[in-house]
Image 1 (tube, each protein chain N blue to C red):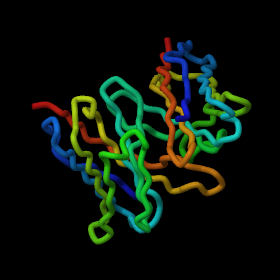
Image 2 (image 1 turned 90 degrees about the vertical axis):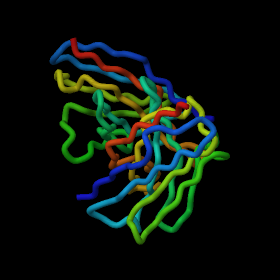
Image 3 (image 1 turned 60 degrees about the vertical axis):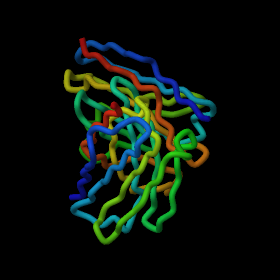
Image 4 (image 1 turned 90 degrees about the horizontal axis):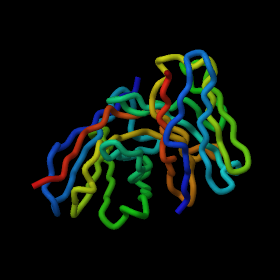
Length: 122
Length: 106
């Protein structure tokens, strides 16, 4: 059974770079679409980016200039970097899988990690 | 950018039917899925491709999508169904989430 586990620092200073990793266990990262999603406290969900196992990436236009998503197949994990963070980037960050990836027009998140809370504060 | 609008809250009595709407321009032309998120937990998909239930999701959950509105219906609502619900679709190469609806079982 595939499981996702996020890791990274819980506290990041303003203007610095937020770096998170999602470890994929119980299955291979060399298939499917791998995503980052965030949720500010008390607010809704916001998709950040995906990376396909081939290395193809897609970003939320509102965050594109600050985000990089990458894949490490040797470690079966993928990562997120968000630069120049502000308090508005404080959120629970989730990694998630899309095992459909547009098949028959379906794009959805069938598997989620538990999330990691990131606070931006000095 | 594409927007999906949901009512902030829906209240339902135990055993009754709860309907959660999700509105977007020509949404019926797209596939919609729904997530349930309980406090302190990750979202769980409860519906995909408008009206298909993932394995393990109770039959009391059903979905529809037509025109500009998709609807998630919970029949015979139980206390355990109290949660936030989000719709989601795909537009212009991006995943788009709805604004979210808090379902309260009174």
